[in-house]
Length: 394
Length: 98
Image (cartoon, rainbow over all chains, first blue to last red; front, side):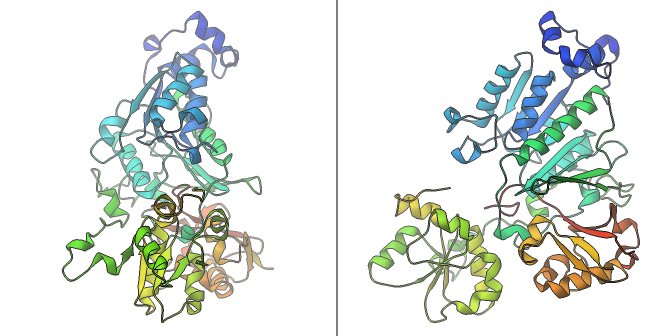
């Protein structure tokens, strides 16, 4: 993996020897292994749930250089699992807070931060200076982008993914191993993702998965052990069970197969079926007000005595946190079998947390013949911001 | 003896929250057919309108991907376990946007 010859490896200072003594006394790591770790570098895509434990353990272990690609700011809702950031960091850039935390853990580590979205334009350039790429992202377009850029630059991808109580991990895109596309040639189209009705993540889960990613990164860089190549780990936190599935390199794989058809980075939003939002105000004959309503407009309607049917398509536990008075809860996943409960003769305002799920509910209701359905713009979040600040946001 | 199909978290809303479902049949395809017979809501998540298994849904017989066995024609023995392993992007609601 690491190509530096023995003579090029950096030496360890007396301080470092003291710090890494628990590594140095193990012959599997030893002085040479620790020097390889010091010579090594990892690029963390995202400083969130997975990137936090991964970067912290890799820093403590003495990796030479950690790159972080993130453009987000720390939010209160991150603190339940993103240990790089603390309460006093809320509102500041994740890169800044991550750098501070890592420097405190281990000042011998060089931290390079990139305040940007990872894109098809910058990925190859960013990846080329690192030994391992650690995918801690949370969306399909970036997952495919990271994979393809790893294959094209020949960098291994320490992959981890989490959802509710379940996590997945593997090492993709090594020279002879499978890549993410060998496993999943294409992503699920938006809207048909089974998980659309229920999200969330158990706070400790990314700790397990992120540390698996860090373990694999460390093994690759130190050149020890059996890496998680060609194997897919699935972890169920509720059952406390790990399962291992076999992965194979697909000779037909469009990126890493024998006759690749993807030889440069593409438009991953388009690949994942995400179309740019149509600008409805520009569509001839269409009035944006036919589709959407702002919280302020809805409030005016209600104050004027109108009684639109407010359909909340979130989950019951979300409804417990906040709600629009008088709304009716039918989770999106239950709508196909419960839409008959809705009144055909009233205006329906569909609403969720931010407007994405209710947009799908609106599409569905139109497809089954409801003509007068509007989506509440910005969901309950904007409702609270604009109309009812007394309620908590999540 | 029936076989077990492991249901991943994202698909549990369609199996009354069950983590696994007991099914019977002689091949992988028959087990999946029995599963969708018992839980009809799963059908559109597993199959295209043309009745083909969707590309982003991977099915494993024990620890082996059925694409490298005989796909849906793969025979199953008593006690074999089938797992559905969908792609999962992250903690956001559906891997795209909230």
